Amino acid sequence: MRGSRWLWIALALSVALNLFFAGMHLGGGLSDHRRSGRAGGLPPGFESLSAADQTIVRDRFRLAMAAGREDRRAAREARRRAAAALAAEPLDRGRVEAALAEARQRHAESRLRADTALVTAAADLSPEGRRRLARLLSRGPRGEDRRPRG
Image 1 (cartoon, rainbow, N blue to C red):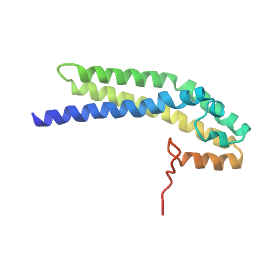
Image 2 (spheres, helix red, strand yellow):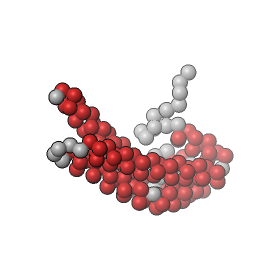
Image 3 (cartoon, rainbow, N blue to C red):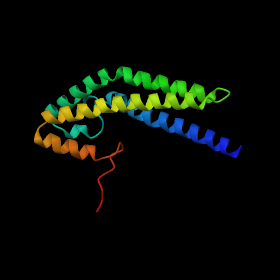
Image 4 (cartoon, rainbow, N blue to C red):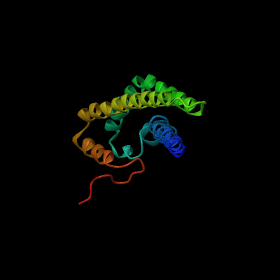
């Protein structure tokens, strides 16, 4: 019975972490920045880009966000199914795992669109804009430096 308890804890923790990180990435990121008025809807730090470079990045991400809308909706729905399966009696581990796998896949597809938009935008940025974008990319979501030390 002890192993079953740890499985429940691990599954609950996995769902909680998936929901947290997916929500941060898919839900909160761009909408919070749009409301705050920072750099015309861009994440923090992007105001360091020139106006022309901001426009390029904003336009590429706007297209990527529109194209990924269905992936984000499907990821949310898969997380809801996972949560419902976790709460159901008896636990259907396969159903939970399948729903979480679908949520991860849809999240990955959405992230791929965002990464592709970044590369597409970078191709059209000024050299200084690309250098600034590289610095922004090396920072974490709160602005901390993620570059390796040493």
